[in-house]
Amino acid sequence: MASGHALLLEAYKEKIPHPQETATGGQYEVGSLFYVDGTPFLESSEFTKGQVTINGEEFDQVLLNFDVVRDQLITYHPRNYQQIILDYRKVQAFQLQNGRKFIQVEENPGYSWHFNGYYEVLWDDKITILSKHYKEEEIKKDHGSSDKSFEFEIHEDFFVMTSQGFHRINRKKDIETYMGIPKKQVKQLLKKEGLRFKKQLREVLVVLGAFYSSEKTNY
Image (tube, rainbow, N blue to C red; front, side, top):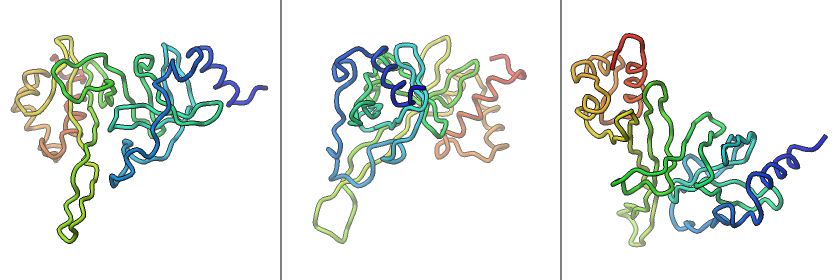
């Protein structure tokens, strides 16, 4: 029986033609942000086994990590284990080992941080709620040192996809405008769940997504 490594190699060769570096996004620049405290990846620099859909074909048990500074999905070359970038034009979706799911969105007009279009799926039932992760280099505040140092500042923006289009959620009134949930109803739900809109928007949108999708609503 062929090993998992051999099967993975054959699958890659079939779905992503040679040369690998042309079909993918090339070799990943390891350590190029060494001078910044923290990791450019979503959670940590450790690669874990996940799933990725390439050219419509799903691959399991693939070593993956997600660089949110460059918006790049990284894997290991199945032959020589170099870190390589998967071409975002060939990736439709991926899931990390911890269950977090992402899709590739072709365009988001007017949004500066769209880059390669990878968005996390927070909710997907009658309405799709997405978040965009990115990190920026910021000068580290260290009043006890005259040396300039840098750290990553973490950001997350939120969007809803409905039959009417793709919309960013910033304020409470955006919920009523794009999700159709009245302001009074939003207030009641947040009070019930003990959530604060601005500080816990990620959790708030999951709650609102569940409410939107429930049989009790007709939005």
